[in-house]
Length: 76
Image (cartoon, rainbow, N blue to C red; front, side, top):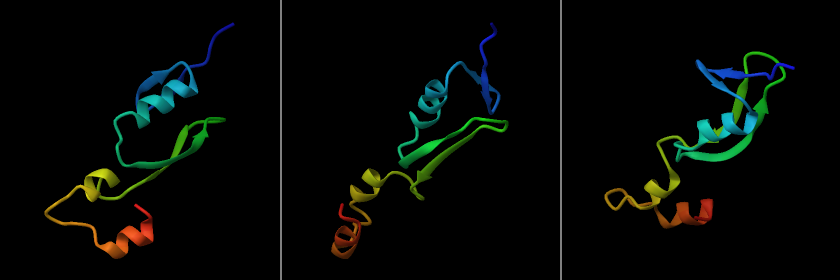
């Protein structure tokens, strides 16, 4: 029995969790991971990303501080 390999951007992954871990590990601006559509090619990873980088970096930016209104709106 031959095991399936999942190919994404030229990389081969043995399992879906390996694929997810690889694509989310170095992305600090991932807000939410929704899932993987792997039933047919192309495999799609569905994530919500924060534009402009990570939320933590934005909150800690002393040169351009987040306003009090933004803290209330986004419950930071």
